Length: 295
Image 1 (spheres, rainbow, N blue to C red):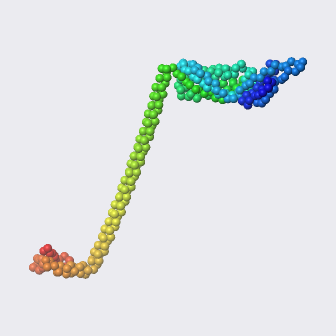
Image 2 (image 1 turned 180 degrees about the horizontal axis):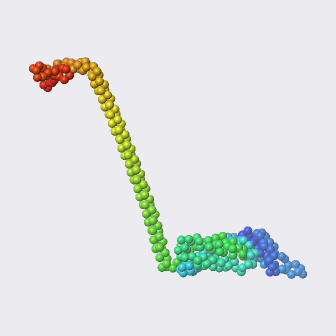
């Protein structure tokens, strides 16, 4: 490379100042400085290089009071990129120092509005507040803030122990609550299952009772119908004997025939007196008799 030439890499941009005036912004490439000419003054040229790569800046151990007057130390890491090389050189004296102070003040404003409990339970809120606070300000001097994350939160020693105990107690309480809810749910399911079983058993018992009652009613109906049929048959037989006395006489003769076959059978004929020395007659016009057996 010759003395009057220079190269700008892809990672940078160049600001060409000629006699103190910015005349152009240089992209990546090879450039040549002006040469001195005869009888003409050589201009004074200055090239300022601006790094366009994404970089990190750490703001360490900032002691800040919370809304409830607790002093904590916070470290924040900021990720940024230069987007306007002219503004980043001409609008502020040192853009990294400006980013540092802007993030520092944004963190103080955010933490001052939050209690310690809010910071512990919603740490991301602090990062979001800082990013929202510095984004517009940084854009005014040619810088894009990509991220602003809380790296560390350091509490006073005694407070750290207290917070650890509080967090431990909260975790234990949450575990007990979950256990109690699970137990209550199991008891509810068991009670529901038992109630369903009782309901099903009651319904089955009621159905069995109903079916038994129905069967008993049906059996009684059948018995009653059978008795009615038997009574009707007897009534028909009695009517036949009344209408045809010979049938009844035939039945008596058949009974005597069956008894005559038994050696132990006895027949008793009643020849009772009617007052005139003659044998009395039975009320149906026949002699009274009875039959029996020694067995």
